[in-house]
Length: 190
Image (cartoon, rainbow, N blue to C red; front, side, top):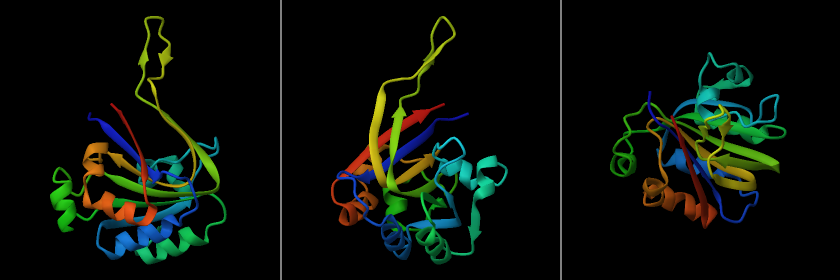
């Protein structure tokens, strides 16, 4: 068992900034590898379908996701989706020089990444890992983020990206070039 890292990245000033264009630019620069999947952003309870669940064929949430042969097909499907949508892919391409330099712990496994689009906005509320009190009641940890966003990126996995590592990376510089100032929130749990 290991620590799962969730890193959420969004523009500081929430706006519809075409996350698909950002992903397309990063794909063209060789940052990411497949497999590529698209599907709904939410499950039946209107909760976000997390990248790792969408990427796993055996997870019930993944049934609504379609596989695509390449990133261009996935991006086209993501752009054409009616309503809240998710584009999920297999992680970084470890052959990219900046991945090898900035994320040297990454070995090509244990990371799923998603881009989300919610045209009417989605209230993203996340808490730090909580604990069970002596009465057996689970209590959330401190609030990490509570913001309504139309678009964001989500990095999730055991070889995930934590805040300091992301903020000082070439990838963050590329994302800032597209979105400007960033809102970054990290959540870790066992």
